[in-house]
Amino acid sequence: MRIIPLLIMLFLASCIGKLDKDNPNLNKEASEPKPKIKIDSLQLDTETKFIIGKNDTGNGYFNLINPVVFSNTASLYATSTENSEIVTKLKFNAPLIIENPNDYWGEFYTINYGNKKAYISASNVASHKIDVTVKDKKYTYYFITHYSKKYNPNKNGFTIYKYDRERKQFVDTFSLADSRADIVYQVNNAAWANSDIIFYTQEINAYCGGGTHENYIIEANGHFNILFKTYTYADDAEAPQVNYSTISFPKNVTNDTIRFHKVSPVEVKNKKGKAIILKDGSPKVESIDSISFYKWNGSSLILLGQKAVKKQ
Image (cartoon, rainbow, N blue to C red):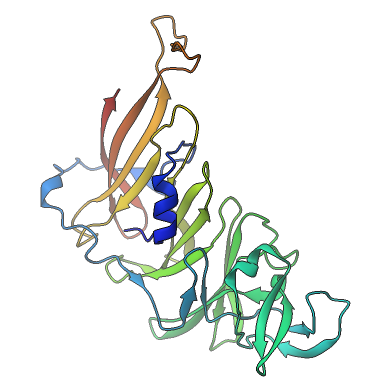
């Protein structure tokens, strides 16, 4: 289950990639006998779907979901500098109309305020605000995706804040330092036992050698964890290498298996353990194509088995 905008797909088609991301880090070996895995019987991606609301907007490289002021108060400026005139001040949770999501790359978001342009420091903005009700309790999740010394001290990462709307207080946070949240979606978690919510985030590096990094983040049993990390790399080197991973969810995650598919390059070595060098001076490379099978047991991912095929 992946969403890659058309422009990104075209970009990836012109480049092929390379790898260094890890396998899923929320898993345990099954202690019980491993069941036989029936790959052909899987009905993929029919239950664990993205939830996309009417207030989910973007441009293919970034999306926004109900962006709001996150700081207690935030100044709106007449120009994109804090030395300019202060137009007004807004309080926490005030809605924002952000004109261009690509302003992420700068220090200020341009917003529409009273049919006029104004500017707000990106470090005071929650770019994604998602309201949910879990077991009759009302929560809001705020994503701080831009660097903020106070709220998100991860220059290449993001922080999620969980807010209890009835108690009017924050009750949990989760930070990821090695991946941006350019795109954020809520995932249907109805079939995931003991889970409160699942999020999908995607970092997009739209240049050759860039590619995408994706995260599936679950909150279950009162804790946030990363379910899976997937990626695609694009490399315009003279000897391009296939390098990507994908995740496929079954119709019923309780009774059937989740498939984590990974294709990665490895250097071919001789009997002495040294890399085999081709005539052009580059190392000989093979691709490893592997599939890992998992089940969700209500608290963690259980690794059921793996299948690997080495390709020239």
